[in-house]
Image 1: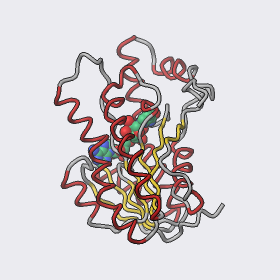
Image 2 (image 1 turned 60 degrees about the vertical axis):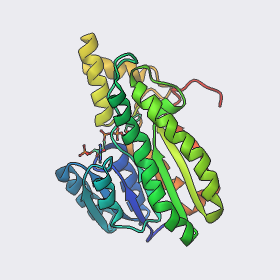
Image 3 (image 1 turned 60 degrees about the horizontal axis):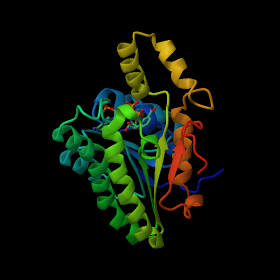
Length: 258
Ligand code: NAP
């Protein structure tokens, strides 16, 4: 399917690896020029080189921390953008009783206030043009809390509320905002979370992965490529009537009728 977005320009945050990279690659395959970001310059340059070679699109790299004002200013200087994919690393696991006010503020800054600031920066330009797409990478924890990820449960719920209201205020200008909610995907983040289980329970990594896979009806983790393809469709010309939705990509793991 032609996604109808060839020649558009996208900012894909936190995209040197994992789900962000999957989104960047799928948009590039659809002919979208990219601004890619991550903190580590080495992996970022390598990912950008792979995507340029595979898809012959323009790729600008901006190394920096997207959760800081300076990091956001550096990427936004490369606008204007037709498409925004927000993403950042997830908060660390722990127990509800462990976290301090500072831990909550860090999580809220990274996983709620950063995507909100990016949307506030790009939405006016998109609305003036009469076309825009925003996809926020959030988490299954928005639909079903993950016990050890209370910081994620909390911060992402706030972002979800902002999107629910804002998406309906910009839709008449041809701008859509939607959230993609990953369940377990085979990325460094999943390996880090499985590693914590390995250390806590004295089991092997293979056992930790097999245990988690057994809780997923699809019987496996998702891939960054599958995730990216869904993101690219939400950014396509065909998806203009999908507004303010929270789309779960979890292999059926969330046991709910709706
Ligand atoms: P990942 O494989 O660890 O990749 C994270 C990417 O983001 C890397 O490119 C990393 O590069 C970049 N990054 C992290 N913090 C950043 C920052 N502050 N500024 C700029 N770039 C940053 O993670 P992932 O699995 O793709 O996860 C992406 C998001 O989805 C996370 O918020 C995660 O919590 C959420 N999620 C993932 C899963 C899953 O199963 N994978 C499930 C639910 C939710 P640098 O380290 O070089 O900056």
